[in-house]
Length: 455
Ligand code: SF4
Image (tube, rainbow, N blue to C red; front, side):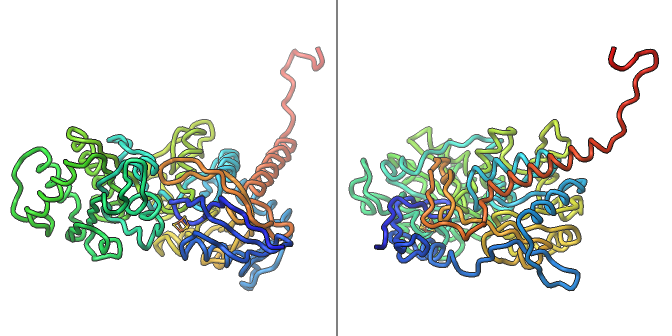
């Protein structure tokens, strides 16, 4: 008989919905139905078994791929990392914290640079937070308390489809019993997005002028005059939005790539945090980054605990970790051709990096660890298939508000296919063996003159 599994976590976006109900076949091998997920989350489960390889594939001199064993793939990867001067291990948005910790052991042993997708996503948020703090909250607090919501440079209707219904606009919480009717929604975006469609106020800021608009908001909050129009928005509209924000009982600003990827980047986030602080002189305001992948908050938590830094970790000096985005960030390293081996794990750098860094990285060994074929696997020297976290592999993931959630597995991975954690543990063991083999080849130290061995 088919089996229903409840409280399943969705391994797609940073909302980390953990209320999915998945029905699997009686032999536990097939996913039959997924309830509660949005279309993206549902597709992750329904397509889990499509296009799967069950053995690693090594590129041959003629460009074709040959299947090899996992032992051979582990040996190849360990040797590439061992022989490289400055390997880069990048990705991690789509795996569990256990896999991230195991990969960090490998990076440390190999003297690698360890980086995650924040590098090309909310990395600017980290820089702003280092400078200016993070007056944030959990999504539960927003759901239960917030009567004013601002989405600034974010379009959850498309990118985080259940965010609005689970936490921000529609749910009825402890102090927000009227749901949507009791909330004011402000969307700030150059385009009239589907999120703007449900807003009470949509401010169509001029693309790339968010910093100016934040300045105008802060000026009005502090009671000063502003020009008749700022960043394409009329003075009266700015004053109206600020008045709503000042009168809020509890507000949350959710922001996304509209701030992190446009002119100003970390400074846009920095001033958004300053606006949040200013508003706290009047009432309670919080701010939250709309983190993308379901566990892209994870490496920040795991590596900060291990090394003190959330991303762009240079471990090449081995006894000290160094972090300096711009210098130690993946795209910058690849642009300057500073790395000589690349491990792409739990992401698709070939699809999502600019083309120049991809071309530079492609000049050296490129290994991709991913359950499915993607653009990165198809230009890799080696593709190592692994189990899908949240579908076939359980583990801890961190939601966008830094709340850890235990994900479960609903089916088994194809026979013999390891998890990321198991794979990295095996690579680590092989690196230790290579190190021991090298040490054994070193000539024994000469006995100092005048001292007899054994005495
Ligand atoms: S909103 Fe995000 S986490 Fe929730 S079901 Fe959709 S893709 Fe999955």
